[in-house]
Amino acid sequence: MAAYERIYMDDLPQRAIALWLYLSRRANKDGQCWPGINRIARELHMSRSTVKRAIDDLEASHWLTTEQRWRKNGASTTMLFTLHKQ
Image (cartoon, rainbow, N blue to C red; front, side, top):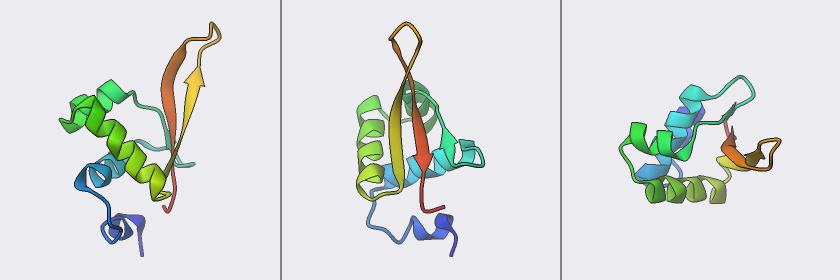
């Protein structure tokens, strides 16, 4: 069964499903992508806090892992999202 079918079988809120589908369409062959929270919120018509809750939902259910990325000067940049259960 494809992940696109399995995601609906987990007990996830719609915000998490929408985020996973959004990220999966942007992921590379390794299941990784790095859109910013503001961009995700704007494109999914969600608030930043709703996007963050969706990230937490997906991490708790092992559909997603995140890793903060850093610039050479020490400033943070976009988060690296790695999708699982693909």
